[in-house]
Image 1 (cartoon, rainbow, N blue to C red):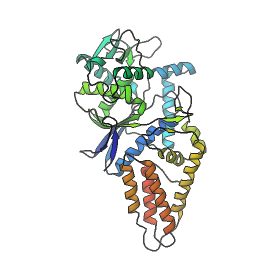
Image 2 (cartoon, protein in one colour):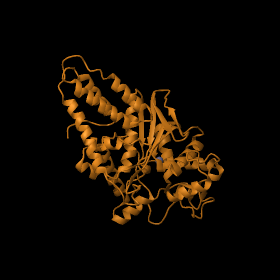
Image 3 (cartoon, helix red, strand yellow):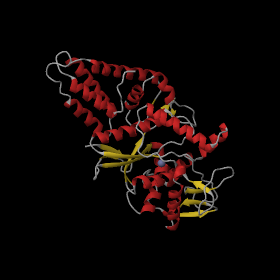
Image 4 (spheres, rainbow, N blue to C red):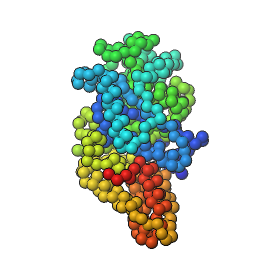
Length: 401
Ligand SMILES: [Zn+2]
């Protein structure tokens, strides 16, 4: 049975589905700059979760949003002197190319925020009607103080919530707000910004509301797995919970919260603002996708890690994969069959244990060694097929470079 750590309960929990389907959402990119390794860690982890649930016999429906209207996009578009839509579109395409190169599967639905304006406005109007939100000078805000459950995911006190939100895009000094922690659902038009008409005047959606709207539209009021980087736990995901549960009246909005840790470089979280980034497109110039994926998956999705010394780590991963390739190339067609079942079972028990991909990779090393030792006088074809199948669960193609 698959167990995952649920951020909401802070516990490992058995993962179940009554109808055999997992409805899964992962917060996607704000397309204004190139995909770096920190993003890739999140999307590879989510991709492996999806592949493993399917390996266990479940069906998955996946959604990933694109925040294609945002302060960062508008600022960057002004800097480089191109229309914001063009910037968003070209960066989204680069992201998709990077993910395809890394064998990250395309989500079933890949909606843009700008395509959800109607659903977003419906939700904002309903939150106003229910008294969960207020309109001020053309902007609409969520009333945090009226919601005693607000912050259930982050489990922080008010002061810590406010400090964290302020580091992550909150404007505490906005004079329209009743409380500095109130967050914007709809923001009134600013000079030179794209706007959409609304019952509250021209404006554009706040960031958090788009994910609530897309979850509801594509997956319904209660979804199974919601993923994202651990820096989204607060405020983004707590805001999503507040909006969605008050709008639909149904709880829980999400059954399992799946958060992926940060990647560091030079001692700091890899980020656009610090400029300490490894870009996927650069790594792909010198390394195969399997090598990059394998290296990333040596790290547990919940543990922050350092990418310093990445050249040595990638070379070591390449050497491991070379041994697998060698095992797959051995003839080994006569004699008793090498039974792959114990290796498959070990792989599965590592993956069942909160996606221990590092352990799973080690079991594939062991299987490759067993094939190598047995090939002289065993039929290893079934074992070779198992190695390929299990590698595929990790998204490793095992093609010769
Ligand atoms: Zn989101």
